[in-house]
Length: 191
Ligand SMILES: Cc1cc2nc3c(=O)[nH]c(=O)nc-3n(C[C@H](O)[C@H](O)[C@H](O)COP(=O)(O)O)c2cc1C
Image (cartoon, rainbow, N blue to C red; front, side, top):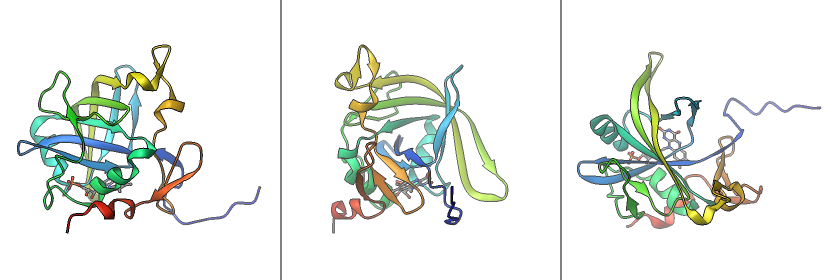
């Protein structure tokens, strides 16, 4: 099979997440592509959100964050909260928040899956001073009832919004294009 070297941007399909945290008394959200599972027992995940992000302030302060998995219908809002910073714009009204057992950590009602995490460690990489990795133990997972079949999450109903880093595109899980990264959300920027 012939291979084409396209640079060093990871091109694999990953689903996008929206992280939620309470910052200075208000819900704030940011979009991340860098996230993953560390272990199932105990259920542990990581998110990478660079140090200057506003959201990080709330995660450091409260010790909790939420991971929300948007579907393709939320592409525009997902892009928007990844385009603008809570430092400049109040993003608390972009989504409808709900709360689980930790009342200081907003989760997003519109997203079919919500994962509430407690920070158990924060990791820094000396050669990459901006990188901040929060390792979170999963406290609770919520799934929209309509996105389940026989009591289990159903990927066909969840339709997570996918991302290819190389090319900067959003995709439907089916492979149909769902937008351009850092473009879709521009229409929501209030002048
Ligand atoms: C599709 C997409 C993926 C992103 N992935 C990451 C990421 O993995 N890590 C990161 O630090 N920022 C990432 N960003 C950028 C942040 O979401 C963006 O800078 C955001 O405005 C920060 O908001 P805040 O300052 O309110 O926290 C991504 C943005 C988009 C649109």
